[in-house]
Image 1: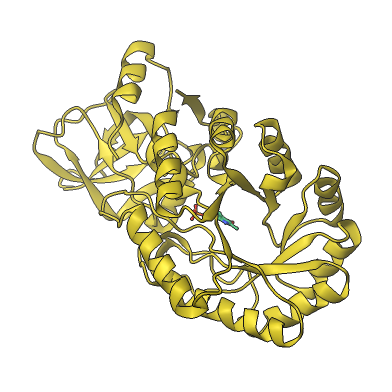
Image 2 (image 1 turned 90 degrees about the vertical axis):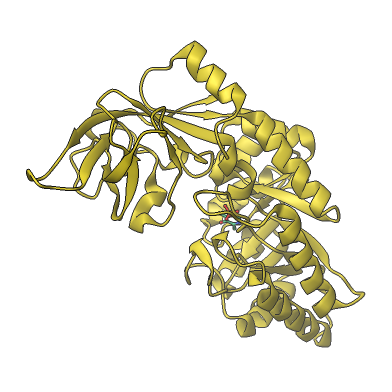
Length: 378
Ligand SMILES: *Cc1c(COP(=O)(O)O)cnc(C)c1O
């Protein structure tokens, strides 16, 4: 989404120095309402890592959101924002046992697992807690897939959940994540089918699962159009109805990018424009923000942010775009160059749109002395 009028006004009036992210809370509120309208029977657990600014968490807590966290620090941030512990899940499948214990002391009672080893930690550190087992998905269709790092084969989930049951935990449900920036509406269907098979296998063993955690993956519009929230909701609803019939499970979603991505804009500045030889038809445009300043998702040019300048009506030509640091990995877009105005000059401002998710938290502390990405939440 283009920068909102409030973001444009803020940048014009405040003229903040250096690269910065400006986040418009009204957009996040709209996104939250769109999710609740489209999926009224599904609980929303906002994935805190996407943008953990206290103002963002407070807005969502006030609106009734629950929170998906991955560490004790994130649990504490969600609590500080006003969420009660029953609205917090510890969704990371890789936890230290003492962090599980700490979260449990704080009142958190819902944990993700994907192995017997993790089940044993939860059973010791959070006796009686609810657990859901994460299953692998292939991530096809996702622009930022999550690979095989999280989740177990669906055939193993039954054993993991039976182990949890035997150790006194409540075997509560199944989770999966179809990959971030998922542009295929059908991506949820095979995982929902696998979830149903696991529900049935557990039922045969006398354990009734209750919940399917449908994960994140809801996209933000970058350069290409993406389906709207309603289209995702319909596809997921149809898939649940197809596989579960009338015995619909409780469902939760964990949107991160889809909740905050389009709410933020990074203001950056052109530091240098140069060529590599006299006849080079590509300009190199160096910005004051790069991979280490918060734009880590440009890795492998996976996420291509819309770039906006005040000279976009002028003729354009291809540019390689790079960050300001002394690391040669700090090139944002080279394999697929960007067209930028031929009149672009040093000192010009560039707005990098749809940067509300996965930016501030990815910024390095002080690589080359550059400060972490500043954020203004308005
Ligand atoms: C990161 C993450 C999310 C959020 O994913 P998006 O694609 O940003 O919506 C949700 N659930 C889990 C477990 C995650 O790790």
